[in-house]
Image (cartoon, rainbow, N blue to C red; front, side, top):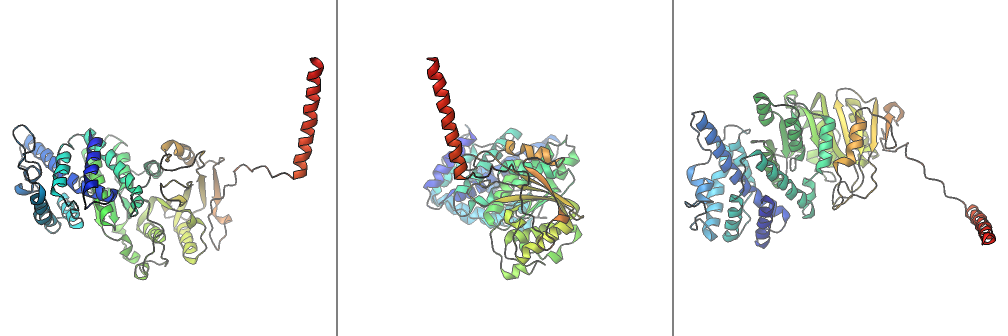
Length: 483
């Protein structure tokens, strides 16, 4: 049912003059979904309070509640045909509802509260749906959705992930918000966070890493009340520069079950590395920072190693903000391993001397749909220099693409072998003392790849053909003799 509802909503938004692409569909669906989710959450909290004999005070004032403006119901449970629609609905949403919800950013007690998230979300976006009749239809569909049970939330989060994935085909750099889930799950498994760790992604995007880490920890053991509280409030942290990704990331985490995600809308790279104190650091970093971007000179001043390459600045940030003994899994362009510019050399040296880069996963082209860039995943722990690095080259017998995406089975051999760092046809170990100590080149050159047979000389091939011809003649003669 949910899948068809999402399809119907996309069909409506496709017809609306204010929505031009899949990115707009996701953004507009998100804010309406969020308000419906909030309504169901308030109902659940009111019921829970009633069972314990306590009173519950709604976050949203009566006149702004979903059941009043969006879905006033008749006695038969159907939406009242007198509900706001057309210009009246647009005027209310744009001129009354959004300004009211924005105010929560200044009135909320703390950024960790859902009140603050409400204020921040509605400060960051606007209603793009121009037709009040289209908006009414979308609201009617979303009103049919339920977020009350674990099964409903799980199905909804799965569909929402699907929508995020589709943004990769939508232009406007939609693909940057989506890292393939099989890859994220594998990175989380290898890093193996534990309950009580703080987990951080400074380029949070759609919050895929934080969502998968939440799923991993939730299933890691039977959770106590304290564990649940820890996962909800003291585990997951993120920063995101772009408004749309910020909203999608928060919505994605909420659908996965984290009520008030600790995601801040800010430019991570605007923070000076010298200002990072021990209290700002995290136990685990999981990230796929944007690469290929160019940062301005004033942003570069925040970093000891000056470079315009966004991913290199993020890597410096991650090394600095990781606690001693902390663990990281970070996706980066494979050229990071071998670039000869001064900044790349200095950054490789910094990584190898301040952290133990114990594993590098070399991914095939096409891992990221729509992007021809080849990437690697760096797995490292902070605090001790690297003595040796285990490389694994993912060699598949097919080309990856939209219809032939990476799956968890593709990565199963890597997950198993990395536990013992064994050598195989696809894996090998590099002693850091043996690499060039001036360039610190870490190129992923597999010494175990079976060598192809050398090309033969034309004369050798012709001689073999003549020998085969003679052999064929002899066989034919014997056959004729028998007939």
